[in-house]
Image (cartoon, rainbow over all chains, first blue to last red; front, side):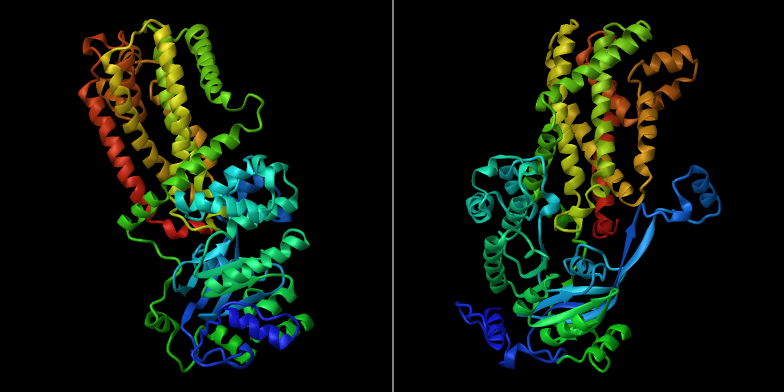
Length: 288
Length: 311
């Protein structure tokens, strides 16, 4: 991963090269981190084959059928199915292959299926049609859903670590590191509901990023905390990327994507509109 | 590089023309489907590996549940006490449900506490998947962890309720006997049944949204059919003049069986002709339900493991 960032930053000519071991993942050197999509230069780590994801959404009744018992009964008698249940076709036939060492940015408007695609790659949402093949277990960076606002930071750290599948020994080992990284100090004794939004975000990021992953999926994780913490977390993500084989990044901040990714996929209404070099795709995306 | 048109075309065609199918490519490099159900023994092992998560999650839920009240976790003791008080006033005094049952407070509370354990586990289990979709869509863990954690949470509550129950039983004039050593056995069997029942309703509740609306009625019917307030034998055969087999069938329902066994252990005047031994039929029923529900529950829940994220 390190060399991709390096290459990219050299191309852009603004950031210093990332120090660290220069691990060549691809057999042949690629000029400026570019390479044709379908030429298998590296080992594929994630294969998405004609993926369709259909979500069920409840409670989205339309204007005509307001919560009314008579309407509900007529609907049942007419066999029109449950009104509140809507099926959302979030991903409509996405196909691509990601290789070892890829850092893939996913861009697209709200509701274009970015987060859904990540969850499907992570194996958390079952495909309606098609399949996702992966090497190892891809993980989403994020434990927010497992944490409880009423509990102290302390308890949440332990709970979050277990939720990500750590052993008690690992939890003990990582605990202090998480507290230090989050920088919330003595607030760790207080319930998370008393935290400012920035502090909460910092603690959540510190917990989520405490584990190493083969294939890492990051969903908007960078947009948290103050300036100082952002720098810290960008550094942490760089480290994670070095140890991970393949990284997927969803972010609204296109600058972050351009800086960290060697390939960008533009999703539009659940389909791939463009897939390729970050600069070209982002330029096209900005125009579109 | 950057042949967006062909990429779109590929996506639409659902494959890459002229090249090996993606499924084959995946196989060649040893990639596996991202979402695949592990084999049953593997699944159980994964679940065991997650025991720390399950326990921590259960405890965290209990702590978080009472964190907003001034009395905090004291409510774990107060809730069963207040329940006991209400039932005793309503059924024991006002409605006069005694009907010749000696030591009615102990009779009623045993039934109530034993039944509440199963009822609460089933109600919580039904929401364990549908209420945690965001977590299921974000983290990897065997999904059975959730209904299991909910059962353990109720088990922790039951520990406190049992202490209250035993104290009240002694206060009503029952003395501890060696048979009290059988209490953990009954509770283990009941917990096995509850885990299984929780898993079954968790899967049902994940796909049938209306189950949560329907469950209160089902559990209330179950409550009345389990003889919590009255003796099934006296009411069904004695008062309603129904044939004996109706009462026998009613005793075979898991909740009634567990309640009956617990009453035999705790209350000397309950069916004195048996001593503190429960009828064989009750024991067989308890063991059968425990083993059957646990085995079937895990299997049934596991069958749908990869589909829980869909909602």
